[in-house]
Length: 167
Image 1 (cartoon, rainbow, N blue to C red):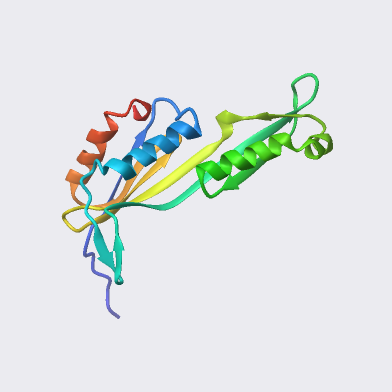
Image 2: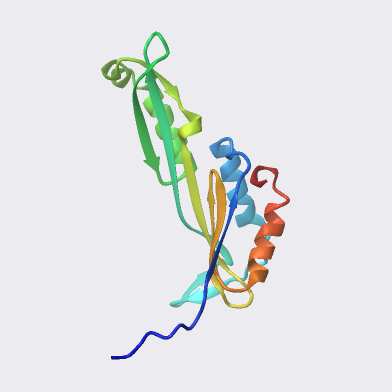
């Protein structure tokens, strides 16, 4: 029986943020900056006959949370709504907050629980050296995965050092 032979070692690096990214607008602006300015120096590539930008969204997920509070401000219920994008999350949260029949059924007034919301966006990046790696932004950390060249981590880290919300 043949053995598996290691051919490559990929790395993962995580930056835990000193404070959570405060809101979805700040989060979306950070992601959009990377897409717009390509601060990691990524290059376009062709895969399976399809042209790809050097940096592109690979996947994302946003979850809004609404609590229902009674007259004493005690939480009597909650709803979490997962959406495919930041704008969709905001729309869904507004709809939940405006749904009076739902508030009646829950037995309380709807209040957005921003602290318990979650945001995640993974970017697929193509380094000039040919490596494909991923940078995943979360509310509490930034993760670089599937890279081998330490210069990639250095480039992402150098950029992140310039973004106050990523301290």
